Image 1 (cartoon, rainbow, N blue to C red):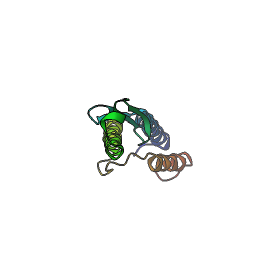
Image 2 (cartoon, rainbow, N blue to C red):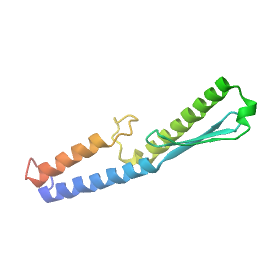
Image 3 (cartoon, one colour):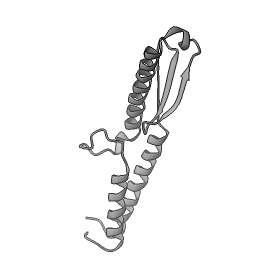
Image 4 (cartoon, helix red, strand yellow):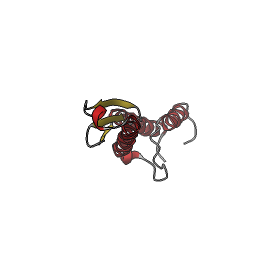
Length: 124
């Protein structure tokens, strides 16, 4: 095993990599179209709707319930694309058993705990 200083550097390096991946996820988006390409939705890697564009023709082309369903379709497809783009952004540092949850805070909390343990001269 390495020295406490070496382990601390490793933990800090990993923490920086996780933060960079988190920034990439935050920047990731997904866009999808629906309703004969008259509806476009853009969703962030965190699943938030960033933009919804409706061509004015949608109001003539679709009944209200159909328009609503097409908007839901566009948003859901954009969310799926954003989620995949977010996963792609940090797949390199994912543990093999991490699944597809793009939540960084638990990982960052564990890295902070490890850094503090090593810095305090904890187990080596």
